[in-house]
Amino acid sequence: MLVLLPPSEGKAAAEAGAPLVLEELSLPGLTAGRRAVFEALVGLCAGEQETAREVLGLSTGLSGEVGKNAGLRTAGALPAGEVYTGVLFDALGLAKLDEAAYALAERSLLVFSGLWGAVRIGDRIPPYRCSMGVKLPPLGALGAYWRREMAEVLPEVAGRGLVLDLRSAAYAAAWKPAGETAARTATVRVLQEREVDGQLKRSVVSHFNKATKGRLVRDLLNAGIEPGSPGELVDALTGLGYRVEVSAEGSARKAWQLDVVVTEIH
Image (cartoon, rainbow, N blue to C red; front, side):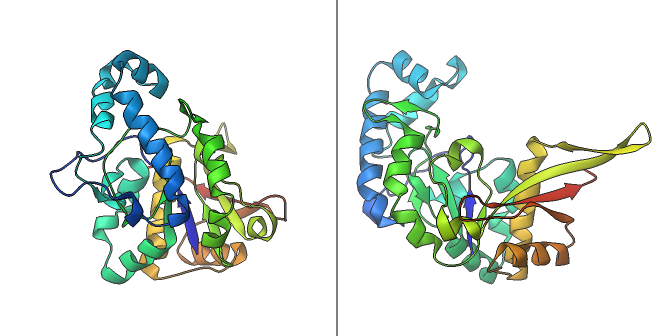
């Protein structure tokens, strides 16, 4: 099982300690690509602050993030699972997993990133600010950049088991499973069902979509379940108490689409 996650905009604060060593990150086939993005980002942020802020799409209140990016070479690095915060990661609760569940998380979870391409939760990285939607001089749009870099690396990482794709659209653009990998990939949409004027209606949830996805991954990890296919995933989540419906079956051209239906959002 490979679970693809988006990063979080929020990051843990940098701490004193050993800095990043690019060559020690997982997926070594991405090292050259990571180095190019890293150097471009640090160079941009070491220059004119206003230009860097505009390129990164930061508000004036987040101008301090530019200086943090400029200092990435010497910033203390932490495991990625500790760097990423926010709704999905709070619900996932990596720090609360037992040893067996955390070991499964280490080998199953892959967090996509505008700066690193993709990292595993044990990879040591410094906090940074660079979304996949950035057009970073001179590399251009990072979604397209990483799509080229990941074309050969990710299919090998995906192996022959289930790919559970929980990424947002911007990060999904960096790699799209194709062929037989697409046929064993499942995406998840969270729908809230509630009664309106005497009728049951469904709507897509946004903020709580992340929390639900974090919880379902946490529950799979805690149960030690590694589904091998989208069908096995449906059975596993149903057994864990989720209401899951298949809205579209996968093929060599598209992933399976699963709907997780909730009545309460929290």
